[in-house]
Image 1 (cartoon, rainbow, N blue to C red):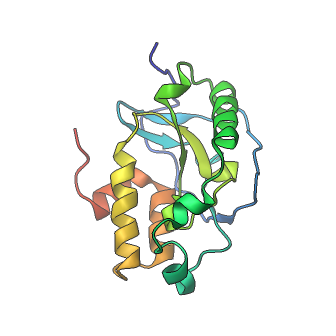
Image 2: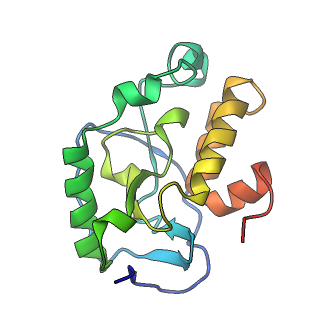
Length: 175
């Protein structure tokens, strides 16, 4: 059975004001959250997934953190953590279907200094694996590491509304 999220509307959720500093293994799952979208394009509820940042990453140290090959893999939380969180979020948010069709995704990716194991930065993203958002993540990562976009701009753009950020930094969404 295909996942069927609770949908308040097809409009994007409101923009989050600011990103928080992440906490290790923060796995509180609020209820009454929603995901909005359809097909391959989904947005998390900004009340529940506003994004959270890794306190170890900043603009001054990107050359020794996120821009080093293998950095993201070295800080990725264990699958046991993300799978448990994904199941809890799916249940609390009314998302039905197989966990295999849902990616427990970092809103602010690890490659852009997102908090690895803070539930405020993780959400059950539909749309298949890999998904459309992955193209944006890699594009922004390359731009930040080349000095074309500063880290904070990339983090806020993807956290506020990754669809709008995709259109700004990549181009039209694929159909």
